[in-house]
Amino acid sequence: MVYDTSSQISKDQAVIIKDSEPERGWTVQWTYSYGGARAAQSQPIGDIDEDGINEVFISNSYQAWYDGSCKILSYDEAQDTYIEEYSWTVDSLNYWRHPLGVCVIDLDDDGDLEFCLAWADTYADGIYAYDWDGTTLTQLDWYNGLGFDLSFGGLSASDYDDDGDIELVFANDPHWYSGTKHVTALGWDNVNDEFVQEAFWTLPGHTNIGCWDTISADTDNDGKTEVIVTISDWDSSQTAGTWALNWNEGTEQWEHEPVSTDYPTDAPVGLALGDLNGNGMPEIGVGSGNWNGEHDAKVWLYEWDGTQYKEVWYKEYSDEPDIFYAIDIGDADNDGTNELCFGTDIVHIFQWDGTDYVEEATLTESRHRLCCLNIGDCDSDGLNEIKTGQRSFSPPGNIGSEFIYKYIGQHPFADFSWTPQNPSTNQQIMFDASASHDPDGTITLYEWDWDNDGVYNEAQSSPTTTHAWATTGSYPVRLRVTDNENATGIITKTVNVSGITLEIDINGGIGVKAIFTNNGTSNVTGVPWQIHVKGGILGRINKTANGMIDIPAGGSKTVGTGMLFGFGAIMITVKVADEEKTAKGTQILIFSMVKK
Image (cartoon, rainbow, N blue to C red; front, top):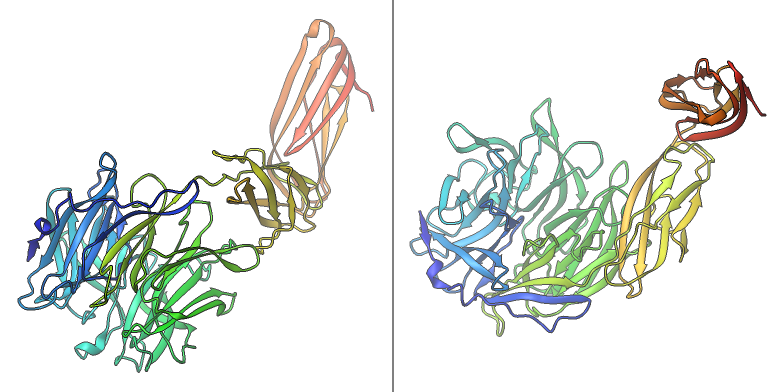
């Protein structure tokens, strides 16, 4: 049963508290102290009532006995603050009412968003599905069957089996009630409007410890979705590690492989996914957790190397509390590249600089253990913010506060084009970044990464440059622009280089003819060609012939205009693919003569 608790916190109380805003940099956009502890949240931002404005979820518990609640907030532009749309809890008798992970998801694939929430320490623990229309909260279903014992927060929307439907995947801790499953996937029955069991997974020999988080993406670039999970007991006395689950269509079961099991004194808990170094392969971020909040924060990044997952970066803060679920990857400052953001008792923001993951900002306003951290468009302005909240039971000062951080100022926008559009091997390509611009300054530096290794090979103040590749292939080219305030913008585009080298020979006769020779190592298929002839006395000759042509490697093809009639000087322009050649000639009645 849903209990409306909205009257406990008025909209007038949820006021904005801003720092003095810098011209450029991070500021606290909003904060509010609800008391109690924030709960872990996987995907808590989305337009769930389809009004064009995103909602933001806040879960709090342990404020006092029996009063945990979940709240829906949204940004009110007129009041310049976040207001509470709704707050509720569930029937709990004398329990804590602990709202844990929340996940915005389109359960029924109708284009409208619903959300799912894990409730614990209630009279009716389980995974709840809800719909919010801006006025009324409707409970759609409640699942506490096989595969649910206790879910601490690892809910994620995932097409885990790549069938085109989004399912709900959640982490489960089986040891609380002698369960047997670590991960459960639920589909949605549109006929009966209810959850349906689809899949389960257990790490053999470890049902005495729990799964803490799940997150999904194609982490090995095989075209299929992997589900990444963490298995531990939270205090590191028993840790099974971080695992990747691959769906087997034949057996209709998950197969698992390790991301890492090397946590000798730590418990992996929170997860994040995203491409930080721009190589097209997402990194997996893992944060350490500890129930007692010991000062030993650790974070790892892993990446698929073609055969296995490898650790690519590690950071430790011996004087800061554990990271827990406060970790995410996304474009937090809206500069066109992803950042790794994680929270201890402060927020650390890291970005790839071309050679390493470096810290670009630290947000210190919280000063207490953080439980959740999410990157998303909280205020519906098309730009991302960082949402985070404190995890606290009974510490002094600033207990149970929520924070939303916003980056002030505009980054430069990177853009570029190149000619020819379809270059061949060893052909000099002109790259032009003149389309890059800075809304509030000037661009002072253009840097180019030609081989997509994260290292910028060329840096200059001019927006134009040239480059060539000796072999065929698809080459992601990365441009980074820097403005006069040292802010950056990045864009990556792919240049396709073929082994095709086309040669044009223009001849006369009865009309103008062009011979196209493919001197490359690859066949030419379906490329456009055009011959345009103009001139003659009084400009009476003006004819265009065009079409599509296939030319095998090492072969030639001839095309022509057909017979022309006139007298006087003519100008001939011939194009094929990206190649162009011009020639002058003379037309004498039906004969076209070309000057060589």
